[in-house]
Image 1 (tube, rainbow, N blue to C red):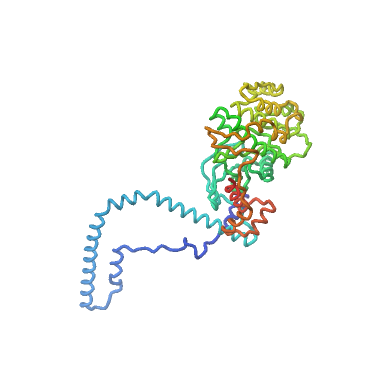
Image 2: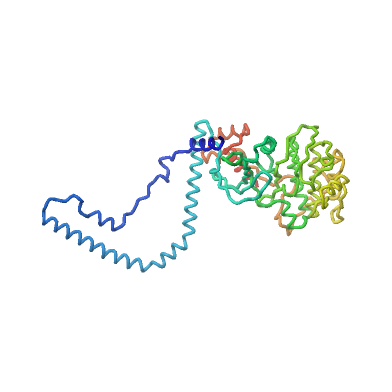
Length: 458
């Protein structure tokens, strides 16, 4: 069974403690004073009958015991003098002591992980990742196949998102293909505006997908809080979305679920990240597909028509719905029932608010064209007048401190050499790291590399 195999593997590869480790040092035990007095007591075996010697021994024992009592009285008296202050200090530093203990425990776990990884690299058989390599925290969200938790990558101390999928629900081929397709697609994309896949591993009961963490929430939450965003904010956000979708389409990958919920914001609110590739797929140029998927309010009319569609155009349509929602606070197509919603989308019937600039209205209309091949392309979006107008504006009084301007985030790309030096500092052989990256392997070593790369991208 898989669970037994994984358990056996982890036991087989469990590292032995190095002899020089600080954890192997035994703490020196300080004996109680009573124990010290007992050390001078006569042995159990009786000595020869020397009455003088017996009397002498008894006298010595009585004297030692009396000395101990006197010493005990003096120390007890001294102890009482500073009992309150000592107790206060102990209580005041209790949390510090607990924190220190936890830090020591974490350091110990980190050393064990690193020790086992390096030993397995030397042996030529890298050990598989297990749950001990991460500290798993609070739940961040829940999806169709599992839950997402906040995690901590123990070697670097950096935050990650861990998507857990119960193995019991991916037994059938259809569901298994969906999960594997998501991993396959994310493995192909490497872009700063797309959530990065770090690694995949399994426990006896769950499949774990480790992803880059973005702590700023998603666009849905932001729009709900604000009601709508300014056009200048919309430009900074939407320009990055164009880059994310283009990164996917260049690799012949369609997302098919572009919506507010699937656009995450980094912790410092400088960058957006396209996420959730659950219904995405890899396609061939010119290929026509027929499967229906996506979020109802964002569906393109050709998907609803169910006569087959060119997949790349459906992402453009969804982008139009998203831009409308960012600038107005609501989606363009709204109805009480699904059939009514489908009718509105098929007829392309929606209201365009007058408060939007003419350039913004034009861009939205060109994306929400009912004829797929008449929709604006990604390259055409980049040079649309809406982006050129007031390009150098500044966002003030916003929940977002400031989104990076232009079409790219303001990253300082950390050089490969810098990251390799940090990996070498942890003990990883540079050649092994380089080869793992070259062959696009997914393991804990490459996950560490990508995390260091992401953490320095600002």
